[in-house]
Image 1 (cartoon, rainbow, N blue to C red):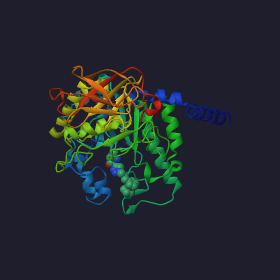
Image 2: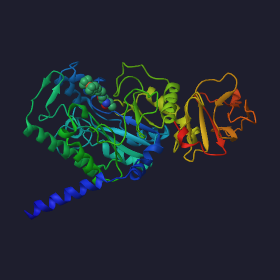
Image 3: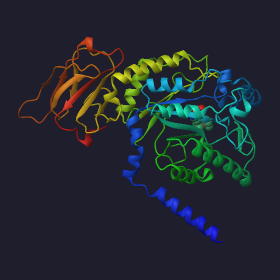
Image 4: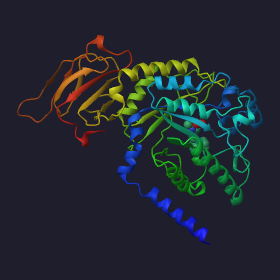
Length: 434
Ligand code: H79
């Protein structure tokens, strides 16, 4: 009796601790994420053996479950070099990474004790792939996030299996068994890896009550009060995750992250050559940060642990650009209205530096319209060259801010996206930040 009482008290205090977070506390918890701007998503799993769709290929009937699982025998990770991965990721300018600990197929990349379906027990790789990666990423000072599929189409107690084949309906005993399993995995991941960010997926198959989403959130935040949870926890997450759809207007949430494939596949699929060009990736990235969001750019390593050349090339080109323009990227906030400048822009936190992303080759001068703030100086980011500018159409008797024209000589243009910094006399008023 006494013990039951104690447990209840503990549950109540922990519930209220997580629920009591103020807006300021949340902003503080989210700060590194807001500042980071770029993350690298990794879909590594047995689907790379045949180079087929991750989990969905058997769920949707493109391959039988049995044949899908035969890929376990071909998953070697024989050239897996987590330190090289971390070097490549850091070199791209990413400040965090999110790796699949377990996709919808239920195959864990670490030695889960909750079942045998993991690469340690069931594949020639025979080892936990997450621990060395987490170490390498943290050694580089990057934040380590982790993708985890709430749904598990392989688990005998999970109701859904194939698109047109269920295991059962309405069996609360079996469902609770599944929840025990799920929570067991969350607990071991929390203890072993203590992720800086939990990237859940697959929540859509059940509602918040069935998942006990609130309890999951509270448990993870009690384990690590600084951790961040993506939105895919049926309303109990911290930030929005548009998938492969670049927002046109600034999303309602102050925290969001576009997750995006480099081609059209999350995992390694050698027949998919529909890669975005580095220029497209960089411009999409500029769009994201200009609207106050992050980009989580995906790579899909081969089964042996090597990263396809096309993907390495994109990361390297991105790295050159992010390194040259770091002051316009990291720690900035969303920029000014498109009516002022017809392209993406960011602002320094004190809103006294405006960064304009010139994402196509200008004919004539670059123009900013209607900005009331006086420009003190202008330069090309990453080069430092001062730029000439002049204000036109501002009669002394008018409050119209006029037109600001900036000369950007062609030899100063970046090969991808040129960034100009305008140093302002006064901060851009918060009401004007997009
Ligand atoms: O891991 C990658 C994908 O495998 C996984 N998320 C990324 C990061 C993913 N694949 N598809 N989706 C997420 C989108 C899900 C679409 C859905 Fe539906 C539309 C879920 C519910 C409506 C498809 C149609 C599945 C059920 C109905």
